[in-house]
Amino acid sequence: MTSVSSTLARLANSIFRGNGKGLVSAATWQIANYAVPLLTFPYLGRVLGVEGFGAMGFAAAVAAYAGLIADWGFSLSATQSASENRHDRAYLNRLVWSVTAAKVVLGVVAAMLIVVALKLWGASASTNNAIYAGLAIACIGACNIEWLLRGLEKLKLFATISVASRVATVPLTYIFVTKKTDIVLAVIISGAGSAISLLIGLFCCIRMGIINTPQTSFGDVALRIKDGFHLFLSQLSVNIYTTSLTVILGFFSSAYQVGLFSGADKLRRPALAVFSPTQMVFFPRISYLAKAEPEKAKRLALRILVVQAVGSAVVSALLALLAPFLVTILLGAEFADAVPVLRVLSLLVFLIGCSSVLGLIIMLPFDLKREFNNCVLIGAVVGVGAAVPLSIEAGAFGLAWAAVAAEFAVAISMFVVLSIRFSWISDLWRRK
Image (cartoon, rainbow, N blue to C red):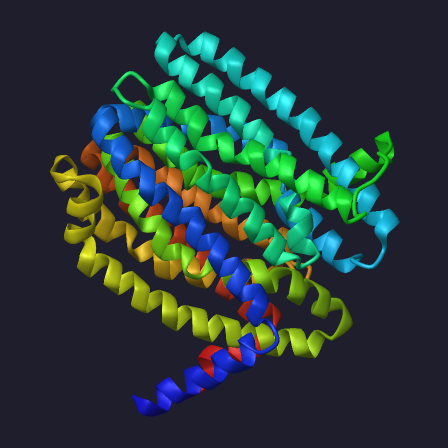
């Protein structure tokens, strides 16, 4: 046991040496990303009730489609482009304006399509209003330029802007959301941080000279959309077996079941957030090294995979063990039925911890975009295929198992593809 611990410690030291400041900044951002909601969603759960909380979650899930289309994979493709061309200010300026123009066009088209779909669906006025509010917030958030700061590895500035923006929404929630009918206000306030972050980020980048006079063209915009297409498909597939599962549950079950699943998922996400700083720091780093020093990139990627797999397994087990305590303290006795749901969702911490390294830290930097898309598509097919019958049969608990099945399919398919493609991956399981 001591030998294993010392080996992991040496691996972690070799990974984090020289990246400490970036990891601290990324960790600060990620902690705030989930800690700030922890300050508000227990309050929202109690004020809005299970059904109101479920309605809010459903509105956010539908609105996320607009944000997904507006983003178009730029959060990865544009980040990678910024990292690879970090020393060319003229290129970066054109990149920013081209990506922003593409996002505006895509966001408007997406919002219009969703509005038409809502009219045809004929949902209640309160539900529609909540979704409309979510659409506006999602489109604003998609136009953010945080991807640029991550690509340039200015993670301290990125973290500061993001944390300050999120914290600003906390007092607004307590002041304005006071009764069960305040669902629309809750949606608006929960996404207000995106608008604040957008304004501050633009101001800072202009002051630093990274962004200046708008320079773009139809050709540039078309090129950015083309570059991001494969990653958009992968994110669309991810959305199908993550956010879309909540929508499926809403169609085939009750608002109560959606509330249980949304509450359990809110508690699961902070556990996974422990590992998100790793991909935030090392995705641009390995994207750069994969072109400049491929052997160094391979060694670093393998070390990250081993450390994150072990760490995520430990966190997953702890989340399952502490599920009753977390649900009671953070959500309240009304959400008692969410305990078994959370225990199933705890498996996602380990599965996503592994697949995020296999996909974002290895496949994308080493130009396996098509293979990445295929693996994620497999997860989408498995997730949706399981979600409908399991939602009908077992509600939130069944949907949780559908989410686990989807992530398991993604992780296994990624590992198989990489084992076939790279000997340095297949050697991991061939070693005795």
